[in-house]
Image (cartoon, rainbow, N blue to C red):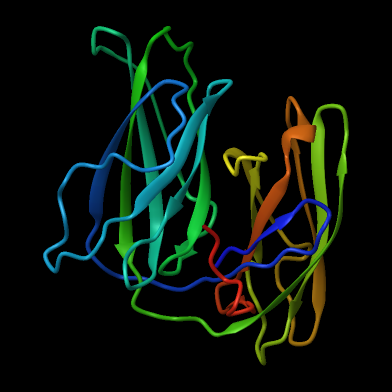
Length: 246
């Protein structure tokens, strides 16, 4: 559950779960370097006519396609995989790559970032398709992780965010993962990153630090950040009045 804040302000977001179900696939066609605000999926729908997951935005930056996915289902989804195929102007495939979203599980109405690395030199005037696959989550995890984020720091070609995750649950929080989506002033995705707390197992009423740090050509372009924390057992404690960004 992402809440978006201006850079230099505390951030909050949410959740993790388990899953078991059939895979679903959707495809999205885009011209290289085209910035989109609404997806152009095919018209296939699920049997019960529920909405399909959206790729809200994607763009190609230095051989990597970055973007974010929104869960438009009424249930959580997990193992959300993004596969990119790049074609030249004649429709011949030139490169391919795949990745999972930064968050293992995405709650209904929430979003998660992704970056797909393309290990090939891309032709000019190329186009790419993004195909999503996912599983339905049957379980919900209680909110028990509290996120505290300090001030960010910017270098000439780097960006860093420090913070802590506090486990307010009654059991250990295992494999605690922190993810971030970094936006420009127009709320377009510039970069995504994730890390694990150190240590990644947090006992009850204990805390552990984390650091999101990455290289970027122009860190001054980053104007807002969405951050999430999840563990195998718990999701993030969220403010219900601010839990969905537009």
